[in-house]
Length: 441
Figure 1 (cartoon, rainbow, N blue to C red):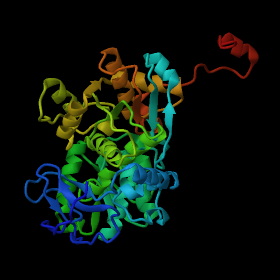
Figure 2: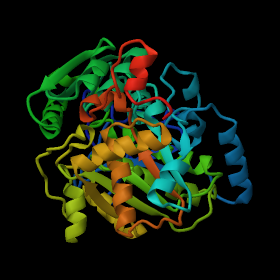
Figure 3: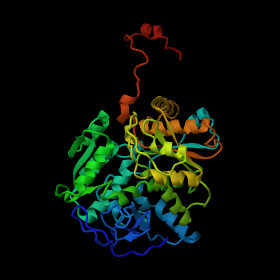
């Protein structure tokens, strides 16, 4: 897995120096590698290949494998802090990252969902990876934490992003904690809970009239303008580093399963980056000898109202056609997902699939998870649970295998999606309680 660093052929982005020396700031990371043509570049705030415009991702020189080295690395990880920084030896961050001011997300619960398993007929073990326990109650805290460390190294002064909601809150909170200014951009019609969470941290929050794809295009223009000088856009010019945060989900799941791979994992798909990085993390653990090398299957989950990857998978296409989102699952409402083709590749390579569910099934799944396991998921969690149920019903998911389903956010952020209220409203008397028919239930 070793790679050699090479001289950068990219140009500076956002006014930062693309030739910033790694010199320990990026841990085992040694280069940026194009996912399409394989060309490598110096570590810098760039996200597209100068030769073919393919996406760049972080390449590493990781420790050699072998039983002894694997045992030592496992022990080092287990002795680390109870957050993503226990995996610092595998991430593009400095060795002292845990001592820096940050939100320190990660190591969230892997819930053994026996009640839900019984409801769905799963016999091989069903788990919910519940990332609502992160500081701003979504998995986005993981990816932002890595991006913040890159922003420090590149000398950025302002953190920014285009967001469907959760990322806006994560950037605002992380910037406040780490001492950055922040300015984040969202579609104008986001859920109220996500708007409040993004605004409360004191940074600038800008609503854009249009969809997330319109917001993302605007941010791409801003990066090339003097107005964006000194700005680190976590999911644009810092995207290669940002994406690496999703690997920690794979690391944690395997460690929490006793250092073994899950047989099946169901992942929500918005841009598709999370799913691709989970696959990358699993492959790294195998290469390092931290888990046994055996087959695993990855399934992508989308909302029917924004399901371009699911449609391409079902039609047998390699190209993902953009769509205009129309779904209550706004955190997944990316009509032109950048990593969509790679999601297709991974689903097919691992023997998985990409499926979607309509809004009614999403709400039903939110209520099912809450009723059986006491986990109130946001709409994206309703998508993964709903897709899991649909795949089991169709025989695509094997109920006899160990299955992990991701819940990436807190239902308190998407209250408008679920109609719920008091079972009854009564006068403060025993007679009224008896009359309501609730006694003895």
